[in-house]
Amino acid sequence: MAAIHSPTHRQPRRHLTVADICEELGISRSTFYEWRAKKTAPPCFKLPNGEIRIRRDDLERWLEGRTELQA
Image (cartoon, rainbow, N blue to C red; front, side, top):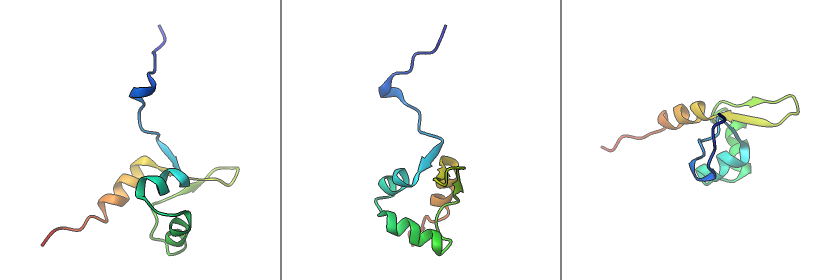
């Protein structure tokens, strides 16, 4: 029997688009591309069509690496 997928119980996507990242982080596309140019953006990869994707796991690790501890 095939699994039924409810739209309210969607799993997070494994590969995110630049738009997904910008929305999630509350930043503009230009900020994301500035970060990429400075090599401070989360790790990305290009699809054969040239579009950029970010793995969810890479984003989570990147965010954890930028967590500041309260003094």
